Image (cartoon, rainbow, N blue to C red; front, side):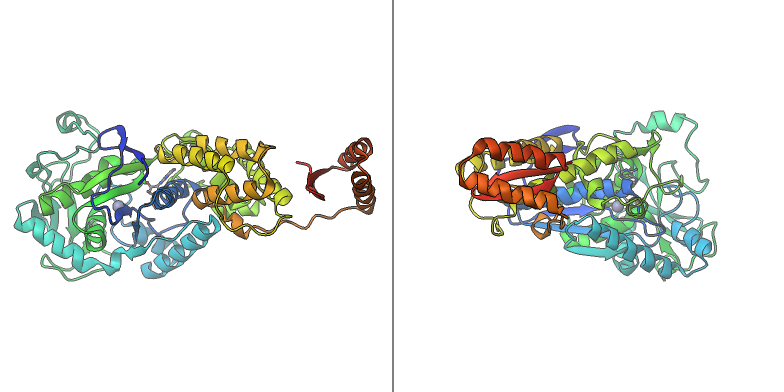
Length: 469
Ligand code: AMP
Ligand code: ZN
């Protein structure tokens, strides 16, 4: 097994990754709340998670990758305030909440596929796991971590000695502050709802029977219950966006560790935000950018993937059309390299030569070091520009890199370029000049061809032609 290092939000350190069970790495990722289109910020996080799963697999681990779909219980504030986002969307679009969930889940996976991401091994919908959530709440109640007030079931954070450890919350300081809105029925301001039977919004469509009355779950309990169902009581890695640290993930830890009495997650991995006009891109703020926005502007969704890979996942990206244009150009650079190289028979991940192997090692070292994608891309550019690598080797190497980068390059087809008849004639002349070893004439013809905006390269006896960038 290779050395694999990851930054852990829990310890605030990069440390060696060791799986709990060497047979299988267990990863849980918080999925989308399906009340609206997912914006490109959400996909920054999903792209990081995809990269992590692929990198671990390349490092030799078996990985079980689970992601949920939130279709009930996520209120407008990540804490327990406001209306369920699904109900807001149902009113907005005059539909039933399950129709909203179906529509946006399908759209989410269409976008997911456009970004050529691998699918999770298990996708689990919150509304399909209500019994598991009820069972967990029951355990929490039996163990004295939950109480009923005003018809709702709350988690009592005072019963857990290390509540807030992920976000390093200083509860006393926060309590003294004025920013927390206190629900009068809670025993303490940080207690949170596990089950609602009595919310101020009475129009909730999704209701289930429970030991506490007809109602619906709080948002946080779904991830604890589904993660335990599919991955067991302890997992290796839990991922999400950085916004989830102070509330959602903090409360997931509280419920899970209170229920089992053991440490739940070894590594917490969080992606930083994409910003729009220097603010977190967010659905609730409106004005967000989706993949549809990009494709309507003629931008390949994979250019957005390239944009994300160009910055380390723990750094913010300030979205701008210039940064996207740059990323498009970089993507084009790979395509141009392939266009030059695919004159050879299709290469299918064969053994690398010694020269190519050292690039592959450097690439993996960068990725296995807390997913250092900018450094891995630097290795890719160096390999593409290396004139000493033979074509078949270079192509093979690019396909190796793509197992982690995920641009689906093995299915990439060269775009048919129209070669004007004048250029075609020059190519013929150049072919003869090369056969006659008249290098001076061949070089002069290359310049003439360049004047038409084409670049000619030699691969053995063959000439290949690409449009100049
Ligand atoms: P949601 O659908 O709001 O539950 O979010 C889905 C995922 O996207 C979560 O992991 C969020 O933390 C993440 N996320 C939300 N906004 C952004 C953003 N602007 N940049 C990066 N990730 C985000
Ligand atoms: Zn979650």
